[in-house]
Length: 237
Image (cartoon, rainbow, N blue to C red; front, side, top):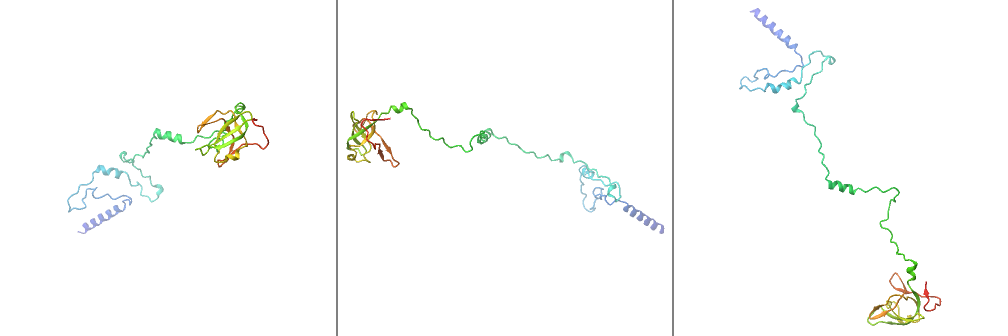
């Protein structure tokens, strides 16, 4: 009897010594992986397939040395992940610009100014006067005339009928100055007329010439005249 107790005690001591030699970093295997049912009273549960657990178990290995020095520890090999688990790199999608938008963008871009061009060009060019030659001017026959008769025309608020003396002939001229001059005050006044203007009819009367007058900003005319004594029929050049 005594020998049986000593043998049991020796077995317990050896088992405890073997337990101390086990590396601390080694992970404990689950009871289900060893084929032991942790719930003996319950119905046996199917364990996970061995093939599925194989990659996870192979990815980490315990160090071969039990020494405490980190320098002597060998690097842990890492098993590459399966190809199916690698996620593809996201790619950016480039959308092509429609031709009509591309042309509009190009057309809206201002063209560079040429070298030497002014920075601020005028918005509109000044209006150029219409020049005439000296030959054109000599075609206009301007002469001195004296008013002999001035009267209003019935049913015409703007026209006056004038009879003028050119020294070599008398003419009838219709002038639109009735709103600005009294007919009686015009008699005897010397004026300038266009003597070679084509005749025209107004209010049933013929006008053979046109008198010259300056136009003021408010619209009223001022008859052209002379300060010195000028003979009738003298030509202006």
